[in-house]
Every structure is written in C-alpha cells, then in structure tokens.
Length: 579
Image (cartoon, rainbow, N blue to C red; front, side, top):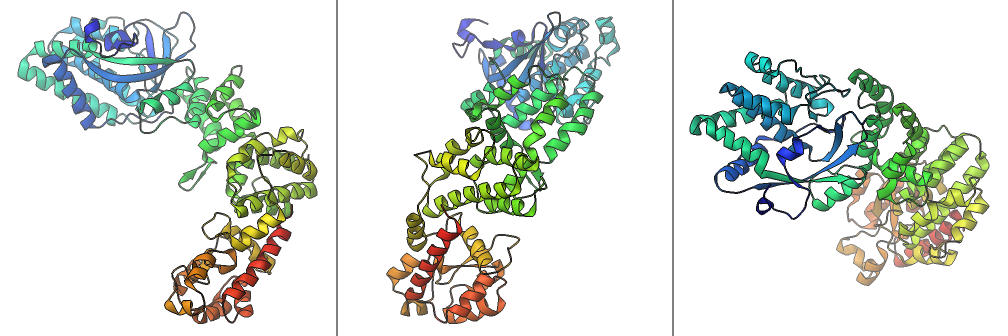
C-alpha cells in the first residue's frame, strides 16, 4: 500500500489482501476457545470500514501474533494464530459475505476471484481442509455451513468448475456466533447495496482488503506470544503456559482425522486435565512451573514452555507426552491440596498433610513432588521420610512465626533434590538449607521472642499454630481450619478496660496467647463480650479441647495471665518445631 497510507513505520504493517493472498493457512488451535465477537464489535468494524470508504485513507486493525508451523515443502504454509483469532475470523466472514453479496448481483467473476484468492487453497493438499482459515473445534461445523451457503448458488458452483470445498471436521454446533455473524455481515452488505448500489459493495471490499491493515508479528516460538500480547494489552485473557502445552501436544496430530484427535483427547488429555479441577478451582496452570523446575532447576517461569517443547521435539505421540507430564501430577496435587493420592503410610501422609496445613509455599513443590514419588516407589523409607518432612516443617514454621517472607525459599527448594544428589536425608536437607546464608533459619530465641511479642493474629501461620496446640492438649484434628477467637476482643466492651489499659489492649490483643480455635458459629456468637460471659461457653460448648482447657485454667483473663501463657506457648513452639 502507499507509504502515506501506513499508520506505522513497521515493514510488517500489511494490508489484508496481502495477508490472505497466496498459499497460507491460518490455524486456530483445535481446542482453543470458541469465536465470540458480539454484534457491538461487528458494528464498530462496519463503522471503521465505512469511514475508510467515505472519509479516511486507511484503518489500522492492530497486531496479530502468529507462529509458523513446520510443513512439507510442497504444502501451504501454516500459521498458528496465537493472538488475533477474533479479528481474523471476523474479516474472513466478511469476505465470505462479500462473495455471497456479489453472487446475488450476478457478479460471479468477481465472486470467483475473491473466493479463490482469499478464502481457499485452489489445489489438492494433504491438509485437513482447503479453507484458508482452520477454526477451533467448536466453530468448525459453522464454518462448513458458511462455505455450504456460498456454493449453494448453482451458477457460482458451476463457475468454480472442478473445485470442491474440502470441509473441516463437522465438530461443534452448526449454529452459533460464527454463523450468526456471517448472516449479520450479509445484512449489512445488503443494506449498503440497497442504499448506494452495487458500486458501494465494490468500494467496501476494496477498502476492506486494500486499506485496512494490521501488523503481523511472527514469533520464533509460541511461548513468546504471551509476552508480546501482554505488553500490547491485546486481549483480556492471555494465553497461559497450560494453553501452549495443550496446543503443542495436539499440533502433533493436527492433520489426523478429527476422530483420532477426539479419541486422544478423551483417552489421555481429559483425564490428565480434569484431575487438576476441584469444584470451580483448577490447579492446571500452576503445575507447569514446578514441573519445569524438576526438568531444569535453573529455569525461569517464562521459559518453561520452551524447555518442554524442546524436550518433545522428537516425540510424535501426544499420549507419550501426556504420560510424561503425569509423572508428578499426583505428588503435586497432594502438596497443593493436602490429599494422599500417592497412598503413603499414615505417618508419612500426616507429615505431608502438616506441611500443607502450615501453608508450605509453592516454591517447595519441586522438591516435595520428587520426594513424594521417591517415598511412594520405596527409594526413601517411611522413618526417613517423616524425619525430612518434619525438618522442613520446622524450618518453614519458624520462619513464618518470625515473619520472614517466603520469597527467598525459591532458591532453596528449586534445586534441593539435586543438591541432595537425589537421595535426601534429614541430615543432608538440614545442611543444604543452612548453607543458604541469605535464608535464615530462626533460632530458639527468635521464635520465643516472636511468640511473646509479635502480632500473629493476621498471619497465615496463626490457624496452624492453634491446630497444633489443640493436638498437643489431646484434641481432635479439625476437618477445616478453625475460626480464630480473640479472648480479649479486638473491639472490647468497656468492661474490659477495667482489667487492661488501652495500651495493653493494643499491644496484646493479637498475640498468640490471646487466641483460641473455635467454630465459626461460636466465634460469631461471643462477639466482644466480657470474659465472664465467654468462659462458660469455652468450657461447656466448644468442640476444641484447647478452648475447654483454657476456660478450666483461667477464671479471669488479665495481662499477667496473658503474659504467662505467652511464655508457655513460646517454650512449646521451640520444642514442637526444633532446629
């Protein structure tokens, strides 16, 4: 296009006619989200198109990010659309609608020219379809219906001669947003022809193909796509590593019959993918960084997909890749959910579960995933497993009590398995952790001071400390995390200030010694009342033995009693989580 019509200086700013001309296929990944542009988006495109015809030289549609898939030399080039699915599909539909509008006016020569140049590959290929757009699974039946509508005109079909449309697999419904938008484009064009004559139609498709431009960004590998479109803010739901992994796996069978693809999906991918979901929450995307760190402890999160893709270059069987991905899935889900799908013995299961309850950060997962598999496979015996897990728990809980941020833990755990030569023992683990000088292992004095003076109420470790104290006094382990009760309330009634000064209240109310585990119902019912009203409820009605014992031991709740309990809890914490 003329230089003066360009809106950018990029040599990759391309008019749509050049983008779609030639032997190029634009492929939406098979399991990508369905096409979803609503009418308001179509109306904006139509307004922009009319502005080009009536007032402007050109219109810039933005950027499209694509990745060139490897094809045989005699086959058309295939570009996977990483970002730009909505715009590409919409433009394609409008060209289809233009062809249909030309046929309605008996302009079959023009219709044939546009059809063969921009919509299809006009020769036999080994690809699944000769359409220049390969939709995702959900939209294929609708695109087939669009092509069926075009060739339903006998005169146009005769004009095409020996050409036959090679349909995509008829997956998805044949009615939906893609089909309805094609009809909407037809209505727009019909109205323009009615108002302005057939010359208007020719002006519109000339403007669409010659004066509407976009920048096509061809990435070296698909993992660069999300980095670019995040920077461009080009979509609200950026493609994740999980999306890229799925697309890469199914690209191995892109030219297979859809029944084959569906069989692989149902037999291998869906069981793998579905296992990550629990209710409305899926851990699918969270899996790939710890899995990637197992492959390479020095990998960055943004490079995980490329690392995996490189590993899979010589693998043609998608199900083999899924099997490899599944190796650590159970261990990951157990670490994230506190479950025991690995079938560990009870004492080992309890040790893993305590780490989950303590809020072990995801930075620990690469080590825990490998360790869990080793225990399951008998490479680490149960006693050693409990010793290692208890050591890690002590390290993490001490840091949490003292308020150390978990950010530095990534450096510790990403290569702890390698540092222990793949055969960790409690001694090795402790030595390696302590070898990280920038990651503190708090001393007994640090822990005692934090328990006695630090406001622990709002911390993530508070509930676990109360659970463990309840276990220590002989109470059952709760199924769900307890609600945390302030004995001295956060907002006390005035009667409390006859016992505590306001300065003591501000300093002591959030200390561990002032907290008890309760049920949600009891916690809400007690509110901010005086201790005389709370004590009998703790003693007689609480399901937590820690609360019942507390009421038996304390007839009054005073600053002196609170300080004495702080001392006792500090000593217990040091003993419970030794260094």
